[in-house]
Length: 213
Image (cartoon, rainbow, N blue to C red):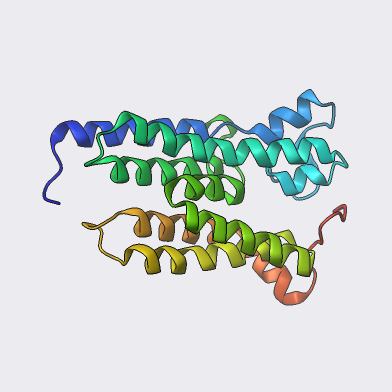
C-alpha cells in the first residue's frame, strides 16, 4: 500500500482521538465510587483496574470493571472498522486499539495516572485479531490460575500475543499494521508492570484474593 490519502490520515487521527477518549474512561474508579467501596486510588496498589477493585472485597464490581475495561478496547476497534473503508480499516483499527490502551494507562480525566492496560489491551486485540486475543485470554487465565498471580498471567499473555500475530500476519507494516500495533500495546503493558516484575522476582507479589495493605 502506497501513501495514504489525506482524508484517511484525518480519519486515522479522529479514530485515535476516539480510542484514547474511550480508553480514558476510568470504569474501576467510577464503579467503586458508585458502589460505596471508596476511592480506589487509596486502596491496595492504587491502580484503577479490576485486580485492585477485587481488593475491596467486591467481586461484582471487579467483574464489571474487567468487562467494561475490555469492552472499551473492543468498541474502539469496532468503531474504527465501521467508520473506515475496507482498504484502510486495518490501519484505523490498529491505531484505535493502541490509542485505547494508551488512554487507559494515561487517562486525561485522572491527570494521566491510570491503569496497566491489561483488560483494555485484551479487548482491543480480541477485536483486532480474534485468534490472537483468544490465545492471550487463555494464557492469561491459565498462568494466573496456576500461579495465583494476576500480573504473571498478564505478562505471559502480552509476551505470547505478539508471537501469535506475527505467525498469522508476518511483520510487514504495508501488509498489515496489526502486528506492529500488537507489539506496541504489549511493550506498553509490560512496561507498566515493571514494579510487578520486580516483586515477582523477589517472591513478594500479591496473589489473587489477597488484600494488600
